[in-house]
Image 1 (tube, rainbow, N blue to C red):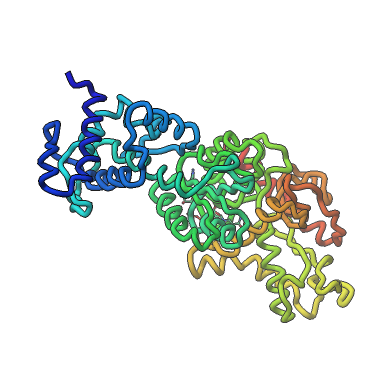
Image 2 (cartoon, rainbow, N blue to C red):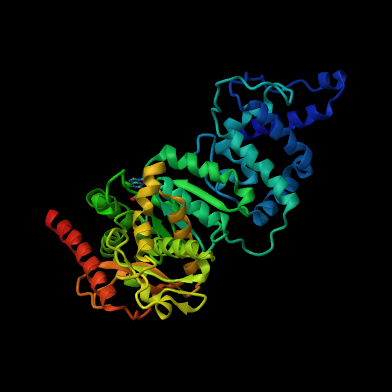
Length: 478
Ligand SMILES: NC(=O)c1ccc[n+]([C@@H]2O[C@H](COP(=O)([O-])OP(=O)(O)OC[C@H]3O[C@@H](n4cnc5c(N)ncnc54)[C@H](O)[C@@H]3O)[C@@H](O)[C@H]2O)c1
């Protein structure tokens, strides 16, 4: 009786022999040893391509008996295997991916057909609508891929697949994708994971960006609904949730988005316990507070983007009015990321010259220059953009990317982000709101002690009160 192994060996030999038998006479001398099977799979022409490549490029494959065994053992010891998937996306076992698989009993049957079937031309048309029915395509493909790899690349050190700059963005809506693109286009990180509950959307968005990775310094972009994909992220950014509709305030989103945050944070932290968590979804101050409590991460590693965006807008509007660049303007907006935010006019300076040294009431009551109008512009900015296009995304995307860069590059830059403010600047409430802090690799490393005017101090406490009320309403609902 012909054993399975010998059956395939015969088949393999037959294929090799047929490659040599160019003349009809010689072909007649070597008739097929086993009856030929009909092909039923669309993948078979490809199988033939790979089977032929295997023959052409792998001279050792001609070796038989002990010589072949020796060769295979030697090859196994120096080949590094990648996790592979079958035609249906099922991961192949390590063994299935070994070059010696031709002699592996489990794979004999699927291999019989391509190896001993009738000769096909390389360009044979693939029947439309048909799908591969076995994993032998992958097995042969693996083999062929390894051949090219072995001939092209000589392993030396142990490769590392992970970087320490992985960033995960949860929510691939308008804001999430603006954050992703701002990070990638500025080369802040070249490993980005996108997570969203909407599978179709996350697949579409991640593939779209992946296909342009050539122009993003070969960045690795993955998209998934499973939080496992976010494993070992240095920074996780949450942008998932409902957004403001025309006329809605940020606080109107509270109830829905708190629910979403409490679903997202535990799996994120489970897979990245060392991460720094940045909350962008609104109302970001309250959601950051909820995220901190849910995550049980150290306080310095959980904050919201807060008024970092308002500060950027504030500096931009001042710069526009003076005809200088926004980077030449120093100044902060603190407090709630929302309608009760506070501009710190006492600290505004351009080119090192303080406004208050030039005009005692700049930005305050009695200011003939009407600088306070700038803050009104800041507060209205999001509403105006939303009235125009339905959402805001680019400015917040760039703002969040700048925070990520401060963390990954340990810049120790000053930024206004939202963190626990109790007992700072006269605030008594247990609230998260924005104050100028120093941001580095471990998150918030220190606070900048402000020299607020009496009015600024009052307004900040009022902002804290607004947030505290919203927080209390949340507790009441539980
Ligand atoms: N902090 C800021 O300065 C700032 C600025 C702009 C927008 N935002 C906020 O960002 C958030 C997102 O805005 P957008 O315009 O991108 O909204 P969007 O509707 O375009 O996207 C939201 C995404 O979140 C996903 N999502 C919803 N629930 C989820 C869950 N449980 N798990 C995973 N994904 C989930 C949705 O599938 C969707 O893709 C809103 O809350 C908005 O108010 C904040």
